[in-house]
Image 1 (cartoon, rainbow, N blue to C red):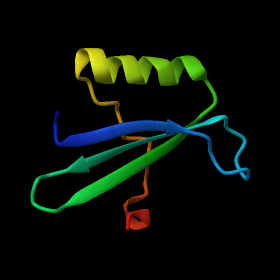
Image 2: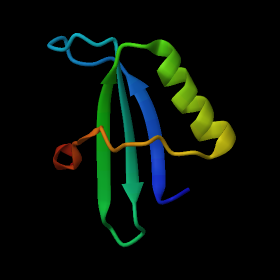
Image 3: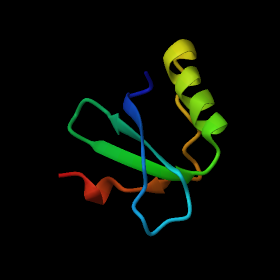
Image 4: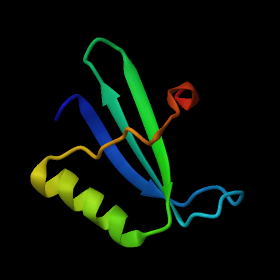
Length: 73
């Protein structure tokens, strides 16, 4: 949906104050991939993002997320 390929939740590195890491990726089908990350403290926000993604086919607003494409191998 909208070239979005995944959404995932994890635990951030120990050097951050937040409980959760949320990542999502995009692929335009031509080999151009992007990955974005945000750190979130509020578990309810994460749950809502995942519900919106799976049930409503709605990609989160990533305008405030960090572009971490450079970390992809």
